[in-house]
Length: 212
Length: 212
Image 1 (tube, rainbow over the protein chains, first blue to last red):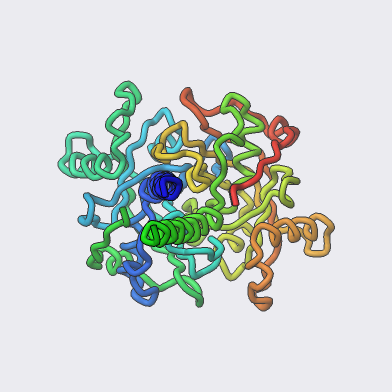
Image 2: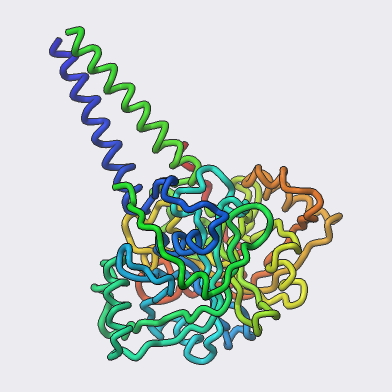
């Protein structure tokens, strides 16, 4: 019986270990319940869901020192405080990094997100149309650091990315905003979903909660 | 004692459930052991590791119909058969999708990967320099479908992305290759790692095995 108790305890310890290792990982990577995922046919709420639930993506600018090549860079972002996202991506960038430098010279930009890291695609290949992806194209602009918009955006960024608060002061990080002009989203078979910027920005965002 | 056995069994069943749920997720998302990760100071092997272990990224091209904006798109890729990667990314694209259409008109392109989806960044923010990222800039070219290179690349793509075999024949998917001209990689503090294309391509790739 003692053996059984010990075995039972070992098993319980093992379960706890699994929960810590994988549960911790799940939390840190923000896996979501697929039941919160809007129907793919509801293009605007779907797009807002994908943007609000994501925490990072690839921001592309024009690299003037690489013959005008499109240059994608991995960045973190936020579109608002938790459950208050407005759909507009804000970034915290330093001109020590090429993306901000490029944007200051040429504002043309796009921001690309995949649903894959959210964990709601399951085992579907990331290029399959049913694992959604969105590209917001527009102009990337540095905000006036003293503006109310920059202050609000900073709060939203820091809420989603607490590490940002600790980033080196002498790197002069500034808030940048993508002014969206075009939206390209694929979230099912049949090609990109027709979706205007106005429809996207006006759409209410369904409140969702990540599994802890 | 029976109760203990039953409890023990319940616990074991629960462990199995946890393993299936989270283990399945881990496998499908290809989480790796961090012990296989090369040292950040070994720039070339690190870059080759990051590319070979990744399965998708953002491919940026110039969108001529969006005022020449850089247009990022989520794509799957392969740099070779398992453990035989050569560092050159190959894609399976259709000109029904804008990325291939753009590339056929303007070959300038970049391909961007984050280490974050591999699971080896832990809880580090995706924009932190210690969560690595790489941008391969160059020219995106469609391969001659009858060439040996296209055949080999197709095998590599299908090995990593079995779903590709089932993609619609009438979409005319073709193999594309990124001819790399510049490498931008951040994998630690202190700015991008100096790394030439030659160093990258000549580097041996450390064989690694994903946790199943």
